[in-house]
Length: 60
Image (cartoon, rainbow, N blue to C red; front, side, top):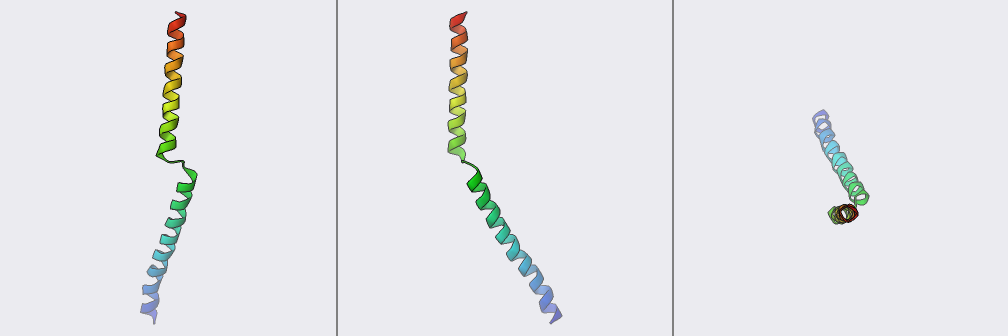
């Protein structure tokens, strides 16, 4: 019976780790907007920087 208990402990630990990993993965998905939002933000930043440099070139 003792040997069975020692075999069940790692099994329960693996199940707990799988549950924790699933919860952590869902939290990360919910938190981040993904690559599409990141690329859209970068495109807006690049456009703003181009406008700013063209405005300063026109003033000179």
